[in-house]
Image (cartoon, rainbow, N blue to C red; front, side, top):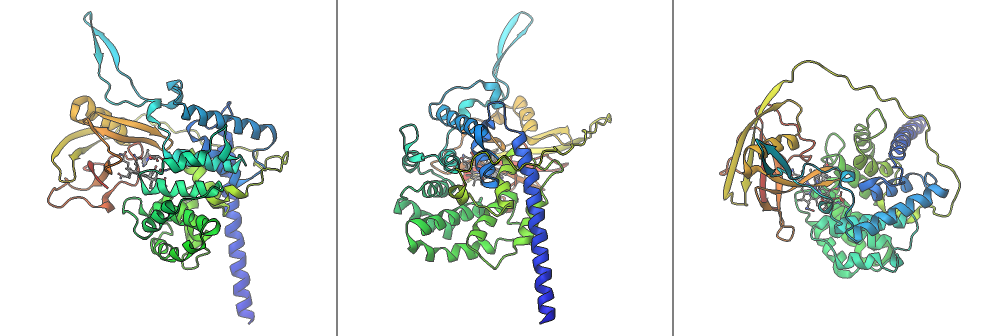
Length: 451
Ligand code: B12
């Protein structure tokens, strides 16, 4: 009995320690996010993500005038997005445009090797859903927003990707609007058989969305959740994560909400915490805003429980910004590495192109692709700029087709790709072109295929 008691006390102490470590980590992450708020009181393209994160982390962090100004800026962002207003390009971090070059008295227009524009940061269904969640977290009536019902806009654009469909159900439900039976029935199928690519993310978000529907719309949905939850549990890996950082933070939210026992929560939280940097961030605003609420035990569904009426409480924010070590500079000449960039077009690989490239070590794939595009027009590409970096939608004139589920997918391979034994999902890169740094002898493949 005594032994059992001391084990229980030890467990409680461990849980409290784990809790306070996560709280401390969240406090530092919150300070980091708040420090990045712009003079216009927004966070540029990441405003809705940041508003959701800050409101879920600490309902008084945005209070009084600060809260009013942040809400105003978010409304402006949304309305500007809705009206397709062309904002000043330099605010959107875009790359080179076609430029005029004069040589020996002759002016030629230099073709851009890649293009991105404000128009290329489209207001997708997922982003509208994210705006809805942000406004709900600020206690706006999204069903009567400047004369429009934002949830009706969502229901009319349910999204093509399964992840988007889950986001639409989640946001509509969180906004207290009726969710169509057709929409959540589709999710029940998705949750039982998620597509392999990004399957964990889609599964976890579907569980969150269906939980909301079960609580508000149809109790019968409850009995369809046990299969997907069990499937999610099996995706936890030895390192505590669920494949990668993003999948893990979604899986943790879903399993916590379900009060599921059969998984190792501490290991999952430790996995997330291992990604925290010295400055309190998790590398960038995208990742930091996504993980912040999770460290405090919140889920996206908590947007409905923020305390919108408590004013003037003052932000409980750590004031001292952590010191960032100055970057070290090395004068040594860069080490060069050789790798091969491959393009495969079509599920049956109707066309292939390859190019051997020599680049300084630690050059991003994005920069290497610009070099490849300058040398060979088959490698010219266009990218959109999302909060998490560049997303490649077109290469060599071949555009992605959302409706046909044809996309450019990125693989990292140890040897040349072989049409007889095509690459598999485990060889997909876990990050996009900005965060892939080709290594000596590597083969990197962009394959245009159906997912
Ligand atoms: C749907 C989706 C896709 C679709 C995109 C379809 C489309 N054109 O809209 C498909 C299946 C094609 C796809 C492809 C890839 N994806 Co993806 N995708 C997602 C997913 C499941 C949902 C995104 C979403 O709708 N979010 C909601 C909206 C509101 O947020 P958003 O930021 O505005 O979302 C947009 C961007 O995220 C963009 N997008 C989607 N994938 C990627 C990947 C990168 C690197 C970038 C910069 C942008 C981007 O499309 C979204 C809008 O449709 C997320 C999962 C997640 N947890 O976020 C992964 C995710 C964003 N994808 C990821 C990855 C790694 C990829 C690939 C690199 C995989 C690969 N090896 O090929 C490729 C991109 C290659 C390329 N061409 O540049 C990672 C990004 C990791 C990171 N460090 O940033 C995520 C987080 C999945 C994960 N758990 O790891 N993806």
